[in-house]
Image (tube, rainbow, N blue to C red; front, side, top):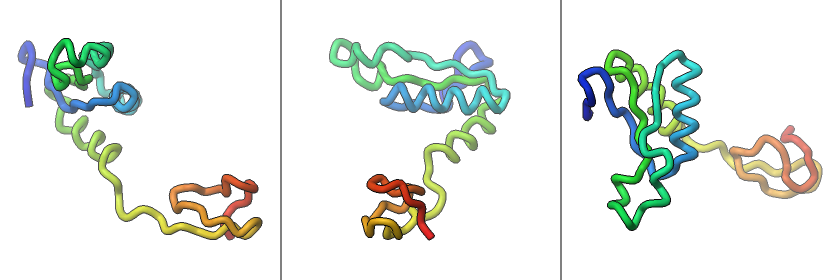
Length: 109
């Protein structure tokens, strides 16, 4: 990965500034000092090359390996998505990632 100033390392680049902020929060909660570069440049895409405008997560080089593992846990799905379920209250089929029926508020059995 790229290094800047010898002690910082870019560990992640993403098009969505909300995801960059989420990653920043997770790393900060784990005690990893980080910052988001290009946080506000997304609106400049078109004036500058899009990839140059994407938010980047930078951390201390000593924390880079741990930061990448944490980012992988957040970004990469762990196992298959849960199977859809049928609501016992109204019979609606609900996608597996949801724990409550959107229609009537019931929970699976």
